[in-house]
Amino acid sequence: MEKKCGNYVPFALFILSEKISVEYLNTLLERALDTSESSAGWYILTVVHITDPSDPYGCAPDEVIVRDGDRVYRMPQKGTRPPLDDSFVSPFLGKTVEDCARYLRGTPDKKDWNREHFCVLCDDDLLEDTVTLVRGFEHGAVHSFPCPVDEIWGKMMTMWNGRSFEEQLQTYQYIVEEHPDKDRSVGEAYELLEYEEDGYIIFIY
Image (tube, rainbow, N blue to C red; front, side, top):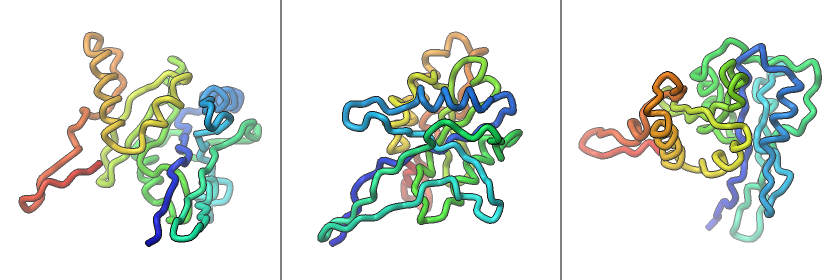
């Protein structure tokens, strides 16, 4: 029986603000670098860019499969390595987080990045030195919360399932509970983890 192994894929990074410069992006990509001993030097973010309208997912890494007997390995993929070209302009300027989630859900099967969890940069992120972490649900809803740039790797690498994201969303909301004016999160932790359909409990994560 074939077994597919390996799940180290990058996360899409959408730029929503025209205030985000290429210089800032280059610095951010370096700060988000995987510095763990086992995979030091791994870029975990893929900057979303569309240079050819006929190939809107050209920036996503291709899935690479290696077979070894009855085992099938999905090879790890790296994200965007800086520096970006100075001419880079984000195709998602002025778009919403929901637009980004919708784009990811349309990713072709042979492309290999995380389709559920991703990152965005908006005006508030630039001001607060954060990146907004997002979970997109199949039915269109999104959950999100900001994360300090220097903590991106540690948080994103735990997001191989929806429950981990919801735990971190809940922690963020608990921390800012006493300062609701500073709460930048979207969604209520765990509110969409399950629903009942025809008498059965359906888990969305």
